[in-house]
Amino acid sequence: MPNIVVKSPQGILTQEMKSALAQKLTRAASDAEQIGSDPLQQFLTWVTFEEWVEGAVFAGGMNPMSQVAPLIVFVYLPEGVLDEIAQAKYGSSIHAALTEAVADRMPVATSVIFNPVSDGDWCANGQVWKLPDIARAAGFKHLQHLVVA
Image (cartoon, rainbow, N blue to C red):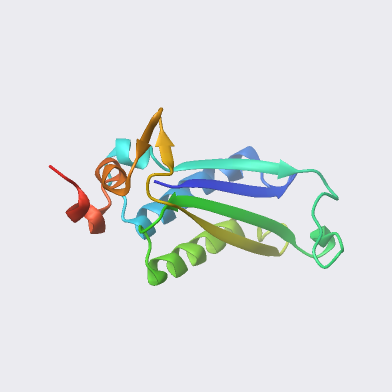
């Protein structure tokens, strides 16, 4: 049940690329977090794209756009959903999806930041959800033992 925010330079990602990336990032989330396949469970993965104007990002004090397309991804997800192996695979899948989307235009540099949300700090539709609630809604295969009947 992640919220995934992709930040990129303006104009690097077309609407078509964003749509394809949203599908790939949703698949990466489903695989890493073991989200169920039901469309309602898949609907809990939200992907947002934010663009910055040229000259708004610097790497080493310089504009990186002459060398690479800098892409930053923030993944907000419930604490306790990923172990180290799943997180590494998830980060690698995100990098691969972004690279594939942009590589024909220019080299890519990615930064993926996982932001685990503490239990009880996630509020959806006006209600606080704890990990068992999220495990039930998202169908996390590896966390079904937390779901109370």
